[in-house]
Length: 329
Image 1 (tube, rainbow, N blue to C red):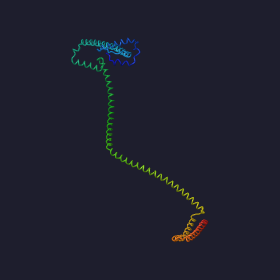
Image 2: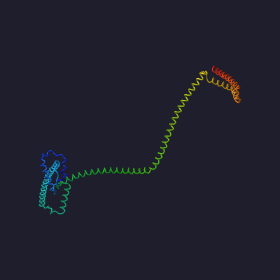
Image 3: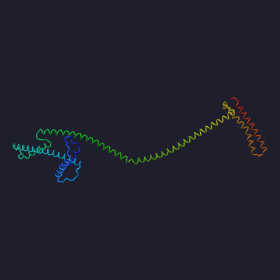
Image 4: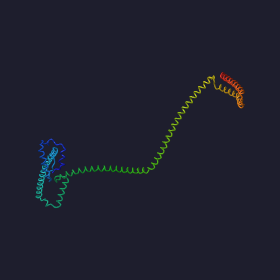
């Protein structure tokens, strides 16, 4: 009996146009399906189960039934052919047996060694897959076997060559693996040293980071101080310029001109020293009056005297300055 899987597999493949049959009515299909199911389940010794005959299930079962009938018919044809060949082989065997009996070479008359030799020849013929025991057939089979052996030897040599190459690669890989293991063990043993060094570097980095922050702060302060210094210098320059302008104005008001040189100024300094020497006794005298008891009349006289002396000294200073300014270089 056909298996259900074998019958369902060809349903997925498209059928050839020549295999298509004219469409039949649903009643005929249902009848054919029922008959096929009854025959299949009867062969298995079981009853046909009850189920609903839908158009889809009927179409599938009808396709399976048609395929089953086709395969059964093909199997019957093949079986009949095999039976015919078996009958021919039996007839030929009987004819060969008669020939051997007439030649005195029947199986009963052969010695055990002869029977063994015949069985060996038959086994070799089956092994070489030849149809007869002719010498030419054995030679052809042996030649084919030799060619196959040479092909196998070439493949074997190639496989051995590849195996040697792979063995060399494997040895190199093992050597590299051993080196890597040694390197790993070395690095593993040096972990503590490098961790200590890394910690030292981390501490140095922390110190350098703090120093960087400190230097940045100092640089900022220095920058601010520099800006303030520049600003103060600018103010000092401004004040100096103003002082120079004020001094220049005073010098211009005093009659200073660009013609006055260092020698003139030195002479004026000498005159100033002489004036200080002359006015020093007067200042000492005035300081001695500070110890006297206060008297309004005397104070008024002293003030008038001092005014007169001051006027004389001022007039003398003007005369000296005028003479210094008008004197040739």
